[in-house]
Length: 128
Image (tube, rainbow, N blue to C red; front, side):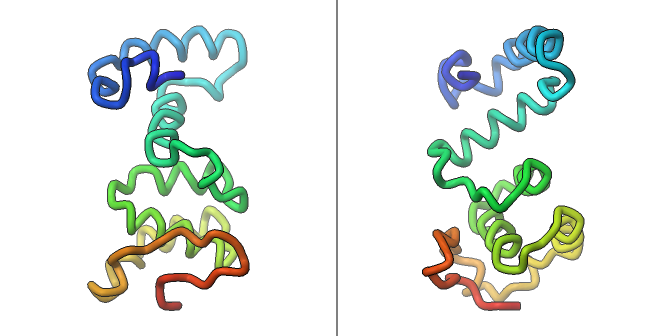
């Protein structure tokens, strides 16, 4: 709804006032979970994963909050896959991001990282 109300993704960054207004109204009705920064993250999550089915239910909102600032799709996919295959807590994910686990991969391993679809599929990245 946020992206549509902002006239699509192209104009989203120019209409932050809409998010500010909505955050004030939603926070009054529903509480602190709808503050300005969370609504921006909700929008960003939608832009990265427009089809909700591509979200991994094994990850919590905290996992996604730390993955969302990552602009590189392969890097996002790497950290999502890492969380799923190694059952990482959000604290462990934070450590992996701080330690730049993705940056330590070889150039070939950094390309075309696809999300793990389910347990029947294998990772397209090498185990660390």
